[in-house]
Image (cartoon, rainbow, N blue to C red):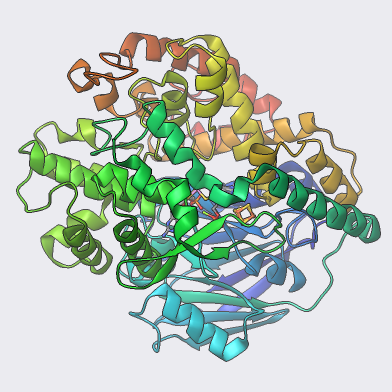
Length: 612
Ligand code: PTT
Ligand code: SF4
């Protein structure tokens, strides 16, 4: 088998044992890598109903066939487990040196099982696996932990680590790597914490198997240069993702005040131009020539990387328009290892619940100093309030009652990204049917929708576009495992990806093969969901109720008095189900599952829910 190492490393923290396991060529071709591997492994190995924070949960770190080789933007890794936030399959994608190192160590994936007896750091060097004490850094933040590891092993090793958020089982704790990389929004950091696993460190020394390494290197190095030039010519990485903020503000799509408002006169104070001016460093992932991480210095003098999501959800959505204060909140999330997006939405929900009389408290929109304290309470699960905040907006709303669930900005428990869809039906659908809960990663249709279609259309063309984007983004990029930004931001052709894939595997795939893979992966994530929530209805694929509320519509501006309409949204959802081959509940039909080669998985899911 070329293109894959053919091996997975399985580590058990309870028994302190490890095993190198091989997988078949059929497995490799069916699931490819990254999300594909993770979703299949977790479906086969996890019993539904297990406690995501118990030792039975497993953390999967999965790479793809082009991971870690000199090809554009391939220094990414997928981290996956049963999510403590959503209760079913969850994953994330982060840039890390661990990608190259794990493949050089001879593995395409790592499975971590069980629970250590005491805080542990896993050290992997080729066939050697060590279980080392991590007491020195338990209780410390991710920046100090990273430095501690660099001090021991140098900067060349691959690292994944968690902060206090993961240790204290905050349901939206992320995994961190390098200076600015974070991934696993649905609580992958908490899964590490539940296993008392503070860090994973990897050093590999072997070549990564490839069908035609010479040709791949020649193409990859040349393409990295071309991408660099395209980035220079377009100027994209001057503002990187933060360039979106001014646009969202202009088109009434910015989250302001827990998504109550869609733009703000002071938004310019935290936009991409201001960020570029405030830049003190630029961060990036390995094998990338369009480094997109803009780091600024915060109110307390710390440095951290801000992307659009972070600024939108920790800034405008909390009515905080001082860049250095947004930087402080961002730094704290990074250091504690909390997802900036869920943390921002949970804080904004809390302020909104107080404002609407559903909760008592002293937190007001715009109060950056109190927001910093609240992040500390959440990260340490300090007191009743800290525990409520650590559980995310949906659980908090259920505890508060008084109808507050309507404005907990989440889908399936995962908080929405920084796009206010009060009147953007296609993007609302993208959140509703994102397979892991609301995430913009799967189908960022908003730019296409507002530039190329009628904003108030709920037509089948929007469902079709969501599916097209899901196939590309959530399917192909997450499974071959590469950063999608060269394609989205610079227009780098999608045809390059089957080309890289074929050079390393010796296969002859075309993009259609990638779409078949994507559909298989999406269907299996749905089956994870069905096993855990057999009685769920199509309402689970609805965005937050407040977007349908006429009383919440803007009173002025470009979308004055407009809001999502429930009956029309439902028809749009049906278009999506029909085009995907899902039934009226949003579950893939048996016919589709068989076509995708998932008969055995259908059999298994059929034990929990009726498949049509
Ligand atoms: C991703 C999510 C995002 S998506 C952002 S900003 W974005 C937030 N970043 C956080 C952060 O920072 N610190 C923190 N403590 N929490 C954070 N949570 C949020 O996490 C990320 C880039 C970005 S920046 C994006 S869009 C693209 N995402 C990709 C993806 O998902 N897949 C892929 N194949 N390529 C991608 N390229 C881009 O990568 P999650 P990173 Mg992150 C400080 O993982 O769970 O998916 O959440 O990976 O290496 O940091 O790069 O405007
Ligand atoms: Fe990482 Fe940004 Fe480069 Fe993508 S464009 S690989 S997220 S630095």
